[in-house]
Image (cartoon, rainbow, N blue to C red; front, top):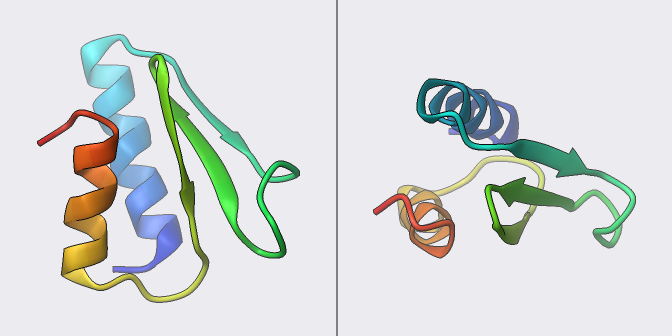
Length: 64
């Protein structure tokens, strides 16, 4: 999965559950994005994301 696919998935989950979702591209270093999901946030790197990284990312946002 790449970053754009993950962001699409998170946006759909936020819309479905009524949680706020925001991408802040100027808060990360280089090509990294800061993603806010409700009251939690994390940094997402660019490029291809391993399944382990996607699982960790979702856990940080309280989705798993």
